Length: 357
Image 1: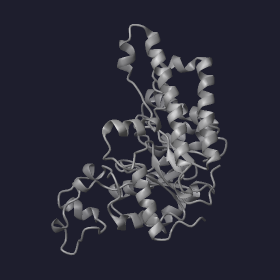
Image 2: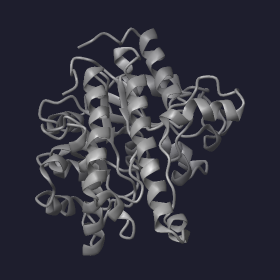
Image 3: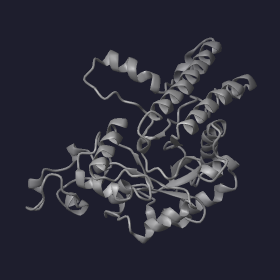
Image 4: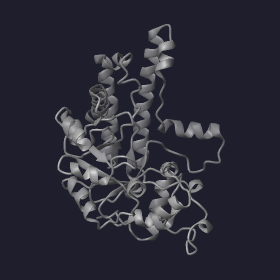
């Protein structure tokens, strides 16, 4: 288990060089050792010799396990408050694809996967890096279609395999693997599948409120069953409020983690979809918090406001996010990845918020 006395700010999946003005070739060379690679079903299917595709897939996984290790190792060199990272979900391309999954079901290959991911987990524990996963949009565990639920459980268990190989999933929330409710069955659909999950999947599944269909109130119906992840930007979009750290619902989210330090997701709308202050009420200034009802009244669309900014341009919004930091680790979902998490951390330093618990 990660040190829960450390307050953390983390980023997602990909490392970016601080100086993005470098030539693209130089940036690619420096960043690719931290970045997972993939291919497509179509490319694999086009190969006349299956061995070509099989070797390609094995090579990609070897690269991805090393890149995950490199990313965790890098994060382990950062100040303790920045030792948190989400790993990409495509570590094993085609792992759940019916035509090609056999490649990764070979006992010899499985042994190599176990070794590779064990190294990643060992490095995370050695450097006290909090790691997590976030299966993608096609993991719809609450679908009303049985075949979709079956595929979604398969996808979630693929993540659980990596979690197991990394040495996590032994305790409740020693690693987070969060999904949205999605699916027409809502919270009841999540309850229905819990007993079908492996122990590692059951220990690590967390449910996040989304910005369109299943919001915080729906997520809270699961508070006795799973850990809940609060996404404050999603809540602002869907429920049109800046939820506060002392809200009773926030206390219930904290309690759902059963003593483990929770995680919160933070993003901000892209500047190009936010109007100039002159289009808002006369007292609105650059840097003020945006009232979403006012934005909608002047023609902004929620679909546009959902898009994540590269960095965190609004210091007041950042202060709002940091107001949760005493009780939550903050996963930054800004497009600029580690550059954005560093920016938020530097503002926390300015506000003298970085003391350990």
